[in-house]
Image (tube, rainbow, N blue to C red; front, side, top):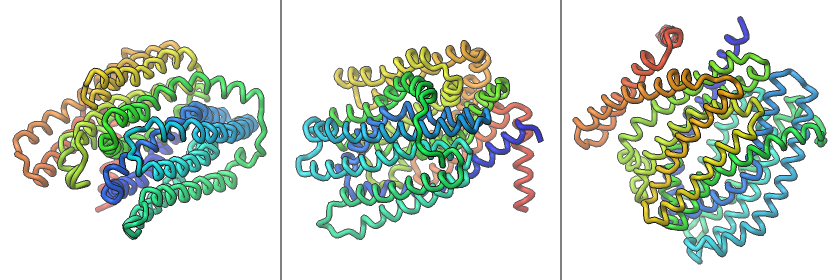
Length: 514
């Protein structure tokens, strides 16, 4: 068996393990979101989203280094240099301990001041709870920073079975936490208790990751030592990557804070709901990417550029197909799903869900491109161009809201910026690795566009022919979308070899079942 065949089978196995985790998590998260919303109420649910988003903004300090750690660990594994691998891990661990201290100081000074003096839409009687939520979030965030090198090692070694099993335990525990809220007496502040239990479990989970990696991976056993050569290369990579991380956080958490300031916690709750739906659906493609990304970096490190480029194209197409498979029926039946799921939901939830899913479908095409660019290590000019373009999300959204545009205009802005960034990424990869823009546009962009159109047309026809009849319309629209997407992916989206591979696997699975 050649290396490429073995790698393909490894990607398939790891993806399957992650899907088992994700399917279980999807069912639980949809239920828990409903329980949390009904238990906390729309106002506290919105406060939770706003404060959590505020703390997440501080990850721009660490986000650039976190991606740097993952890139360097996977790259050294691809080269097979164990000594260099230990040096990367040891240096990154010390860096993240230092970052945890910096984040703590920043949030305890500026963060506390901003929460109490600038987040005016938080009711006065909920400020104490919001401050407790902030403190619990800081503790979880700090340990999460320290454990970043360990989590990166787990992914780099492609131990997706462990990752999946721990994820399932995590889901069960979070379900237990949510259900326990209903047992609390009425005079207890449920938002504070919910945040406290979440922090305790987060600490336990991260401690397990540290223990497991220290026991099983050689580099994680090394004593923390700061290697100047690794520090220079990693911080150099991270410094330029900082622009992209900042832009990404301003696009999400920054815009969420804008919406909170302009429209209050009820709209933030609507955005949180749309984020939950989007996160559930993008997880299908995200698990595929989690299994694929280490192979892109390792194959590039090994010098197999032809295979790397084929992985990038195939990864872009199939991650889009996986997400589209679930996103299109959700877009058509958003109102029905939200009614079944939440019974009552905040205004703007429907339009937010639809537009955010469209944005995610666009952005998912760039995921493999971003990872390939990171694998090259040539990111200075790339981040100056792409990162600066992404930064425009925040000021353009602010201008749109100041001009009186509706809240969904912020996602329209993100769609426009996303198209510009995709074209810029292709341009830089053409120069750095020789990626053919024409080939990518033909084999990926036009391909997924054709598949999407062929899926939407029959689904739209059924949607319009059948009146609003609840479950009957939902089943009819969903079935039409699933069948048309499978056929269009199989006969338009796949190459002949890919089609034969999937048909053979389907037949083999049928024989096993029979």
